[in-house]
Image (cartoon, rainbow over all chains, first blue to last red):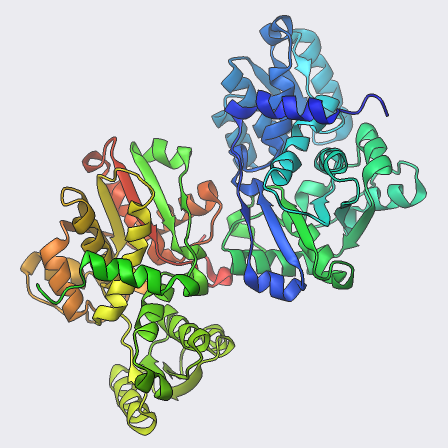
Length: 315
Length: 315
């Protein structure tokens, strides 16, 4: 697809967002390697600014705005990491941000958006209200809508995460990422296939929100109805642009149940001593469930974020 | 004191234990720096082998054994990180280890010692039973007793942690460590004063186990009676050798209550996205409680370990 960000686009995005992001470390655990029977390299986006890879895409979209667009700020609807990421990117760039959030969003998420300087506009907790409220905000303020994932500037930003992984000189046989809206998986697939066409790119998804898996199998975009999983970062339906990239560049999508996700999450807390949100554990769970396919490989796994309610850990 | 390990001893220990330990990273958080009004450099021994700095001292003591001593193995009594560290060091060195543990020790700690190859000998859960049982084990096996902290080879090993910190080229105004038995604080004080006599070395201790604080104030070793704190790694009384070093080289000991420890612990989980045990949070709690003394300084804090029961986090 000629519209997809190119490797040059992704490299330029990486340069562009330097002042906005951390270069996150890659960590390993000999205990997990032994268990997985392969070498796992964890890219720690839980250490990223705002605690998630979302800082990359939001920063890229904000910096790419024209001076005219910047005057009126940016807007989005999100109750998750994209909201905080966009609010922060806007504040760092010195522009306004309007974040439409459902009234039911946890207080801690609203606090995070406010602390990064975002203006919150509350709405009823359903998709129609979110879209209507967002449209009203955009009309009133002239702000530019930055969608959370179904948007090339955002995908291009998320693609910079894999760029840093390839920069480390590791010969990855496989790279895995969780898939929700598909911004991270799509970006990861582009960067990876541009760098190494023979490296497998695999998405990992909860059984309780398996629209990407079903869409990938049927080659038709099937929206998610009533998702139900502990991996609360992966509840959204796959985006249209993201699906196009995935069909073209992703090799497989594997699913796991919540029990398997919790076990993998616990393993990462206990063995790696790092805090991750449940979504992050999905790729490791998928790897452990399908060990035979990864034997003796170098496997890169993106740990997407670390924003978890510590009072509600599932163990 | 002429018996104290010298800088050359500590450097030799660091060389000696290379194959046994990780060089752990130093991490920072801009959010914590802002809150603390100084630059805090966290030395992450929670990422150390066996999940704690104890891997260093145990390895050093084991490698320094004579060939004759090695034949009969090593022994200790401990229900904590030293037990796991000694069992692992012995196994890596190809020798036996006998670990006396109170029958009341948590199943997970016993499992850890076994998984590292240690032989567990259970005893009644009191100090007298521990010592009697240890003596019987040593008599029967000829094993060398490696105490958890009151022992120069162990202190020398713990001192290598600060050596790595000084190696990073940071100009520390202050270095802080938690104090239980005093192995880590003593070793840290030696290395730091050898490297930079003007750098302050400060111990941090829970109010509920403040024997080091009271001993330091009165200049007389006061054993701890009935300690009570969430910082379960710091319940032990200060060792004799450790106290000598502390009197000579430590500038101050600060205390904090459990509420302050839990708040600092939560801050580290939420902002740094890493897993630490409660003891680790004691120095940051002490810093935040006494901010005015550290303003605009470079402060090094040793995060001593990450072995925590995730099902029992205090938040």
